[in-house]
Image 1 (spheres, rainbow, N blue to C red):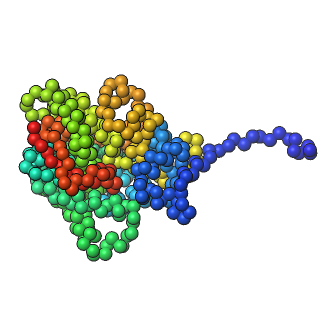
Image 2 (image 1 turned 120 degrees about the vertical axis):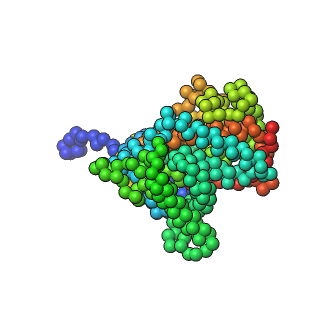
Image 3 (image 1 turned 135 degrees about the vertical axis):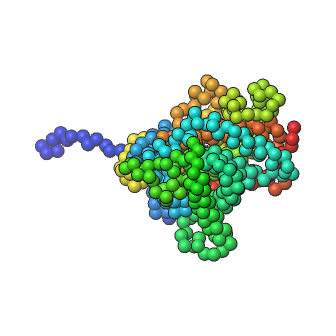
Length: 456
Ligand code: HEM
């Protein structure tokens, strides 16, 4: 032994380590094939490999976060932003200057502009429109031998968002055009996001032509809505007025492109998500007729024999719990992504700068460590006392932190009202050709629900 080797050495503090690699990857393809083949099962099983795991998607390493606590930490940390390949494809279709894809000071300013329209105290102002649309939905169901739930769910959610947030009689006809454009876009957008084939989507085959026509129509519609509102000279107290009067950090009016992209960024995610939850709710009411009975009983106790009104919604506790439990098991937003802006740490693991990170509200909200009888539809778990046992961030269908959906109160009011009104009027049975298996696209929803709405 030399004197040199006896010298005390300063112990090196170990830096954060690399997260474990998830099992089951294939040479070359990595985990990509599993993510494409059965994404929900794959994402749910990742928790068995750790709270943070590495995935190989072809040559790329992507990080996945699986525990509620760390998904909260990720969503709340300024070290992670909205960026990455999925968001870039979305921007190329819907525009770069909207709130859903902006970051930093621009995002903060845009949130300040839109937030007042979604504040809790603003929601009762939307009551009459929500009520009118929910009862119109009942009339359409009554008139249909078989209800095409996909079409009707998108219709009601587009009409409510568009008419509440951009008031004006001109929205009536426009809501129908927006519904039809968005239905086509949602069908093709997911494929364009996960399989970005660029110029191949411009090849004039019928599917591409239809998609591109719908995209052009949506952009044209938004221009028409803005032009009509300006021409009317009216400034109702709504989101569109807030957008038209918004100023940038220098106090100058925001540009036309930003106004346009903002309208799209608010209408598009809102309609797809709320529409998907309406579909999942109808599937739940079909599969759980006992829940239809319980909702009816609650409505009868609270409302009596008159039609359900918007003001009743806050008293319909069980109905709201059915909505929440539906969003737990079938969260419309089933996957979220972020990008690390700097080298950082999550759960003691090193996350390199530029890394893409994914997490799944679907997996987190079905984690047996957070929920007893985790796959069972049990709305009573949300009764006071029960919900307190759910770990923080284990239930976040609207997201967490500065990107949390601005429309959480708006959507809960809309969905609770629709559920109460539909369950009071009908019982539901699947019609021939109905397929309630899960459809995985930009959102998660039943594939093709066709129902008989039986009055009484
Ligand atoms: C963001 C869910 C309805 C507008 C989000 C996010 C989630 C979400 C999870 C966060 C994404 C992230 O963290 O990256 C839902 C669900 C809805 C719903 C489950 C219905 C049940 C709506 C409606 C509107 C809307 C009706 C508008 C009319 C937005 C906007 C953002 C957003 C503008 C982007 C916020 C930002 O990045 O700052 N939504 N949403 N959502 N949602 Fe919703």
